[in-house]
Length: 533
Image (cartoon, rainbow, N blue to C red):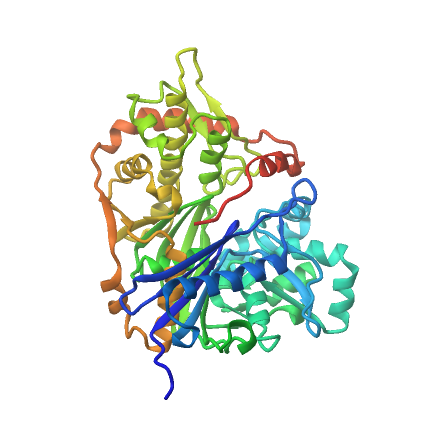
């Protein structure tokens, strides 16, 4: 008699942590395990991960979570995988050996390539042609192409850099034995012993080389920057039977029923299934996503259109804005000994009436939407002899909420979609001070989930839907639990003077650095980027 498969295992691969959870039919965590990843910094501005170390962490946490749950591998109905986005490697299709380490989404080696392309006559011509095509056809995809600006967080020019600098990769491309993949694709290849070279729509749309309007790899972009389409993986539904793990890995075959990008997974885990639902994840950085329904959003201010997930015929799109330095700024303050324990920050911030005019600009990695200035610097402004540690800490925490407000406002202005609910997760969301000010500034209730790792839960939810563990989105909504709801307590207009002062500080921090973005590498070495969750 076949064993009853009554549990879902999910894994979330972040920037410095790999976490696995075992879930039962009520969405409860039955077992957990985590392992640390150590980013590598081989040269200034370069951030890498060891593929084999990541693989070992993945296998170890799955085994550890199942062991912790007290169940056996044969009782697992499906495996869901959530991964950080736009971190990639290339490898030999026949031997499975990687040609180089994972090049992460924080890596700046392609910064000069990005800058030169954005300023090139070619891009000006592309923008001009696309504007004409949009005028003639009114198709949104041409409008999006007329506004596109490359950045280092996308895969595009880091992959171009690899092809320019690693001869063994070029040779493998010529011999049709080169595979490209983000972390999810690499894991699928390893788990199936080379049988599957695939990704899903959420991860593909986060690379910068995928056309979210046509739902395929962009042959135009690949031709423009000379990327070979032959190395790219097949794109499958987010909820899909990707095959089963080789039985030698976990002692039995586990069906792989979901791969999904981490922010999209968190959105699904928060049950933000309806148009107008908003999710705020505050971890290493802040990611604010809004469900835009069945159509991708075309942005003029730097919001990025993403495929949230595709399950069967249903495709859900998101618009995303991000601030790169949230947990990074708090960790930096801790290293400066402004406080010893992160839990102290809430009390310190509440111990003073205001920040005494001190403003903090959280831009160790530049400013993202809506200002989009990679040359901006992090800074304290308005310091006085009366400024104390408590004022500095309050200014740092306020800056997180102020960036949330900035991103939320541009999202409202651009999408013009009525907001239905706002849910927050990630490690920084445990800070009540930040949560309350965010609710005050947005003028909306903000719910904080009772479950910390929403990316893992989202991957589990999708895998569970595919195997029939749960029958509908309604079933999942009934499982969602909020730990606390933050209701606006102060009128937004009362923050106007403080916000105006902070915005003045932000503008004075812009255009600070020269073109050499690798000068930021000192910051990367000082405060290694944490998990996106």
